[in-house]
Amino acid sequence: MSKVVLLVEDDEDNRDLVSFVLARSRMDVELVVAENGQEAVDKALAKTPNLILMDMQMPVMDGWHAVPLLKADARTKDVPVIAFTAQAKPEDKQRAREMGCSDYYTKPMDPEELLTLIKKYL
Amino acid sequence: MEARLAAEEQRFQEEMARREEERRRKELEARALAEEERRRELEIRVADEEKKRKELERRAAAEEERRRAIEAKIQEEADRRKQFEEIAATEERLRKELEGKMMEEVRRRQEEVRMAEETRRKEAELRVAEEQRKLEDMRRQVEDLTRALEQEKNARQEISRLNLQSPAKQLREVLEAAWVNGAPDENAAKELHERAASLNIPPDVEQSLIREVKLDMYSKAVKEVVAKRKLLRSSSSTLEWLRKVYQVSVAEYLENESKFLLDLVADQYKGTVLLVSKLIGTKEDITPRLKSSGFAVVQAITPENALEKIEKVNPNVILCDADFPGGLSGVKFLHVLRANSKFNYIPFVLIGEAAEVAQLKSSELKPNEGVIKQPIDYEELTNLMNEKLAWFREYVSSLK
Image (tube, rainbow over all chains, first blue to last red; front, side, top):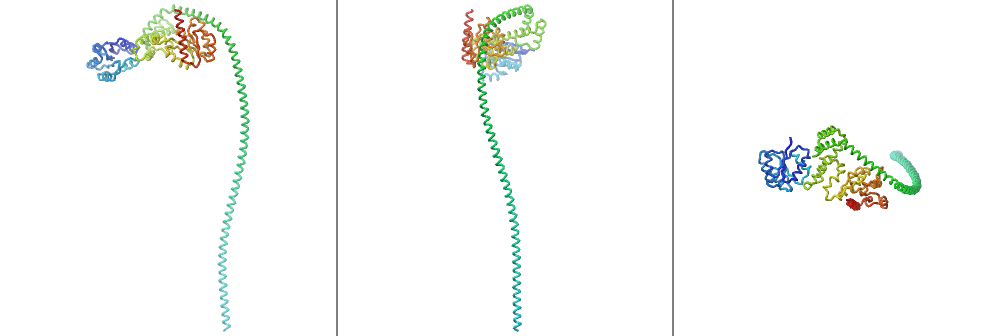
């Protein structure tokens, strides 16, 4: 049975790139995409994913607000979340950890590195 | 009374005399005893002295013996030294003789080498003249051969098209679907092979189609990635990852590198160089420098190998070593290219030894041809490549 990965990312090119990389990963993965934190919470509660890749800077609702909501709900509290961000700030990394994120990934992406990280949680 | 007194006196005198005699006798006896004692002591001492004398004589004899032995050794040593001196003198004489012979030999060899060089030079001159004659023949033969090959290739393509068009097209479509996201797994590959067999596609055609589809799909994936390269940490590691995903070998990658990377390096891409060299060192030295100057580099190990690749690679410049033992030399390769109207406009730069370079420079080089001497001055090489490339661009635009 396919593992479900929820990708929360407002940038279309980045969504396409993650989709491109996952398609070539030989992993049995179903990719669900959300364009902001609100949509991510709705989709995650409707169908619990196996992993969430969460961009932290987004319009409508960003990752910093969406992750606590996901961690507060019994259906999604144990789903590992990998926080995506464009800047490698140590305080953000610490904040994401405290919020319950399992890992932290700084863009720009490296396909092999990203796949290694995803495989770690699937 | 007087008589008795006299007799008594006499007896007394006699008694006294006897006693005196007795005392003297005892004294003499004591003296004799003492003398005897002294004599014995003297005898003992004499015996000791005798013993000591004999010991000294024995030692003297031993010393004499040792002295003689030492003298014998000294004599022996002197003899040996004399022998050594004689041997050393002989060796010195032989060494001088040998040196003389060696000098003679060196002079003789130098003379032989000079004669051989002279002969070789004359032979080379004759060969050059012969080569010139042969090259004209070869040029005609190559033109005939190229025409014949072209006709044969067209005929073969026509036959293949008629025989395989439909099944091959079907298989290609199936392959494209299977390879779109990378190399199919083992089971999928097996199914694809069975499909090819069911379509009666020969194994070599199947392999050729797989290779085509693989490179096409990889090329498309590269273009997708290139379009998003600003989102990627490193274009080169992403291309390397894709190369693994599509199971494109390094050789296949290098052969098609210019095609794959055309877009990626469009802002700095100058052109494609076909580097013809069998020397690993030359390739390792030149390739990165050309790449950093904006050239895509495709390698060939011999001129024959280059001829196989040239149409596919479509190089902007050919950079070629002079020597390829047992096959076409760099100069002959240049003549083959000159004789073929499809290739004679491609800029050609020959890497040669100083003597060859001087010889070639003095001969008639066309504007799209150049030579550079070993060891390579990379600034000179870059200038030469840019010069030939500029000629090439001008030539191409004049055609348009």
